[in-house]
Image 1 (tube, rainbow, N blue to C red):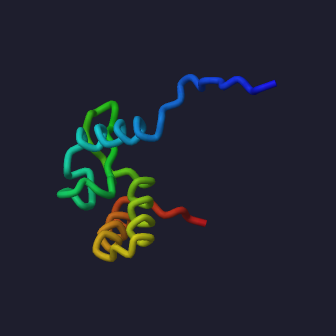
Image 2 (image 1 turned 90 degrees about the horizontal axis):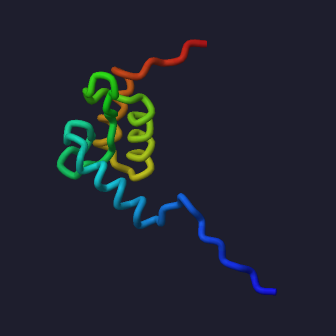
Length: 92
């Protein structure tokens, strides 16, 4: 007996997800990125209550890690400076 193919509902293809991500990135202001000219390394998120763009600790840490992974030292140093300024360190 052959298996019937079941269409997954609610799932987007990789290309559709990529297109959605790209359109969201285009809607974001350049100031929300560490490399504004290319809109790479987002570090700000829109505050739903006030509508302003604010630094997000998770995005800053992700940008720092991604820059380190890609050996992009200039972006990494910017991310480290932002982390030291905007991310509160956990106390033990």
